Length: 264
Ligand code: MN
Image 1: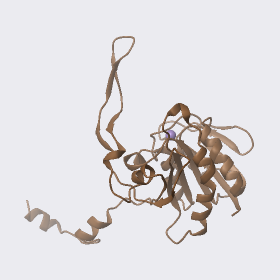
Image 2: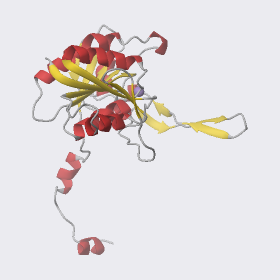
Image 3: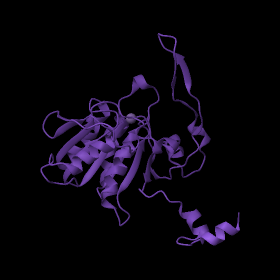
Image 4: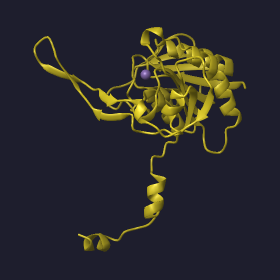
């Protein structure tokens, strides 16, 4: 596999070590690697766009740019400016995120958000994340070893469904393989905001959650794959409508105003 052009972004910011891992992976897969990454940590920004401040783009070496915005902003800059000399990427890699993006975290992940933003414009995209057991022992070894083979295999079997994947690597190197999974919610039980007091006696809060991936038990769940030592590969899509619900009510079915009035 040798693509012409890969764009690399992330949500941990242009200085993050995981970005360097993704850049190195991309170098093995493409002739040209372009980096458009947030200037600062944008974890938790999902697919958000900056609507309330302008974007500044700072060159950080050849084909490398820091953007004062979100991961999705970075994708817009890559696809919507002249900075790539009028060319389009064949693939976007987002990551490698510091920590997994599984279950409920997928909706909030800026790593995934960048991939969604690229796919919206028909650019194939892969979000890459690696779990860690202890933050101080983090080395991205599993992603470094397996990201390129996983991407190449997925690329070889890509089909008519589009190409948008959320890939999570376990923290341990003794992995069993790759499992295709569903994004299964249930890891966040409730918001629990931590209240603190600042130096002037005013209270402030940090968003946190009562959470635990152990609550997820679906055997095909992304979280379960990692728990059982597998790389998790979840195909995503941009559309959020609920197919099962829509089948139940009937896609395209209509209610007249009179029928709704009559049921009041
Ligand atoms: Mn992150």
